[in-house]
Structure formats: structure tokens, C-alpha cells
Image 1 (cartoon, rainbow, N blue to C red):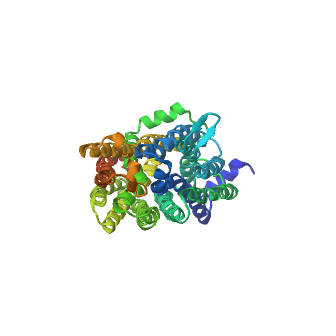
Image 2: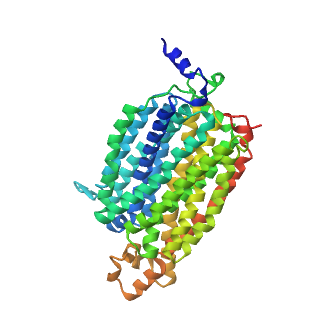
Image 3: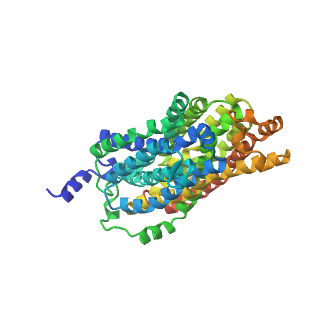
Length: 484
């Protein structure tokens, strides 16, 4: 029996059930989601341990924004396109296996970051950590494009939004576990140990994934008339995307949301520690963990509800995220301005729950507007833009804005930039300052970051607008169902 015959026998009933048995599809989706969770645990851990790492390494908010954002995102986005191009033609399970092992190893190495002297040249810990973060970014670039392509072959179009909604929970669940594990380990041991604890298991999971997940026939759930074994060229893929305004409007909305979301999440722990004088572990476990859990539930709920509305109201996959993003703004502004820690937590929890529906939407729309041969490429283009601009510059924007407000606020109180550095205001060091400088620290240390966080939260309005505009184009651009 030929491979083609086996392929057809698999597809004979029709493609509405997806590849493999229901139980096996569930296992594969669970494995992909676990890997996506690990993806965000490893990349998000730096933000969790930031309150302890920043003063120890003596770096500014701008430098921390570079580490959590652009330092990771640059190679992540550049490598993502060729890896996605490769995933549209090569063995996707092997690609993910190698990439999981790579980013896990580089996460472990982040914990070893320290000043190194080679001959007469001294390389600071900041630069060592930056190089490790670049390595994490290169590895993680090989996760989402092939994973989305696999899900599209395992799940038929009518079930794909819900499956992608489950997968998208990796973003928020990853953040939750990064806080839950990283916060506890940091308080119990130190921030370096936290990198070892979250990085090492990934090496084992990479092996298990390769041994247990099958590579499905490419295009298994697509109608036969839309299938082709001929590889698509990069030019053809880009040409198809240029005919889909809904893709670009969705990408703009996702990019602004990523810009705001990555910026806020990167500095949330630092903000809570500075503004409410709690420990790194307390911020991570008691505030960030329930916030991340709420966001995960919101991501799943949006995907589930969009699936239920799919037949009668397919445009819900765009207008629901638009509504959620707009609703999140007042809750975030309240959370960043209240002096009550409990109220701040409530605001962050509600804001996270209503906001994250856009993640399932971006993948569902990105997969739905193109044919099966360019799905991984479409996802990679989306992630290239959203991560380079959103992840790359969101944390950097908040860090830079915070530093600007700190310097200008101190200047208004008669203190020049060279007289007072932010790290001197840290509780461990503030006792060495004069009474006047201690008073200046009290006035601008947390307030400068607070102002940056509020500005970022308000920018969610632009993301909401782009998703509303996407909704108006879906009936013309989606190819995996009839919108008429």
C-alpha cells in the first residue's frame, strides 16, 4: 500500500474530524500547549526576577527594557521567517524539538550571567545576559509557526478556533507559572537558581515530544481542491498576504496589543515592588499569578465563545477582542494609580481577563485568510511584526519613559541626573543617601514608572480600533469558510 493510499484512507470519511483519533489529537494539542507554556515561562522569567536582578547587576530601567524586549525580540523575529519558511515544507516536529532544547539550554545559561574578564577586556554581566537572551529568542522562534501549522492539520476549520484558543493559553499560563515558580525560587534561593529550575526540564520535554508526536500529512484538513504538493515561494506567500487587508489590520491590532502587553508585563513585578513595598516573591505569587490565571481563563473563554458563535456570527473572532481590549483600559489605569494593593490586584485581574482574547483571534484570522501552503509563513509574518515592534519596543518604551520621568522629576526637585541614580533609591541602598536625596527618591522612584505604565495602558485603545476594522473585512478575506 502506498503512502498516498494511506493518506486517502485517512481522509476518506472527510476532513471534518482532523488527523488521528480524538484522544490523540487532544494529546498533541496538550503537548503543543505545554511547549508554548514553557516558551513563555522561559522568556517571562526575567521580568519576574527583575526586582532582585536589576539592583544586583546595577542596570537602569532602559537597560532592563532592552533585556526583556529588543534584546530578545530582534533575533527572535529575524530567525522566525526562515524557520517558518522551512516549516512549510520540512518536518515540523523535528524543528520544534531542536528549538525547545536550544531555548531551554540558553535559559539555564542566563542564570550564569556574571562579569567576565578575557585578557585585558572585561565583559559586564549585562552583556553576558543580553547574549543569553538573544539565544533564547533564536530557539523560541521555532515554536509557534510550526505549532500553528500542525494544529491546522490536526483540527478541521470548525474546531480550529477553539484548538488555537487552548494553544494560546500558553501565553498567559506561561506567565502564571513563571511567576509561581520564579517568584518562590527567587525568595527562597536567588534569581539565578530560578533560571536553572525552569530551564532544565525543557531538555527532557524536547525528547519526549519527538518520540510521541507524529508529523501529520500536510493539508490534511483542507478540501482536496485546495491542496497542492508544490512548495510555495516566499514571493508567492507575500503576494497572497498583500491581497488580504484583514490580515494586516489584525496584525496592526495584535502589534499594538503586544507593544502594550509585553511592556506592562515586563515591568509589572518591578512596579508592584516599588509602589507597594512588597518582595519579589510576594509580587509574583500573590499578584502576578492570579492575574496570569485570570488572563488564561479569559483567553480560553474568548476562543470557546467565538467557536460557538462561528456559524451565525463569524465576525465575533474580531469584534470580541476589540471589545475586550477597550474594556481593559479603565481597569489597568485604576490598578496603576490606586494606593491599595488589593484594589490594584483586582484591577489587574479583570483587565487581564477581558484583554487576552486577541491572542486566539490573531492566530485564527492569520490561519483563516490564507491557503494551507502558507499558514506557517502567515503566522511568522504576523509574529515578525508583532514581536519586533511589540515585544522589541514595548518594554524598552516603558523603561525609557520611566527613566525620563525619573530624571525630570528629580530635576524639578533640584537634583541633577549625575547626583542620583535610580538604583540608589532601592531599599538596600537608600540608607546611604542624604535626607534630601531620600526625600527625592520617595517622590520619583515609583511614580516615574507608574506614569509610564498608565500611558501604556491607554494605548490599548488603538489596538481595539484595529480589530474593529478587521471585523469589517473578514467576510471578504477569510478562505476557510463561506462568510456570505
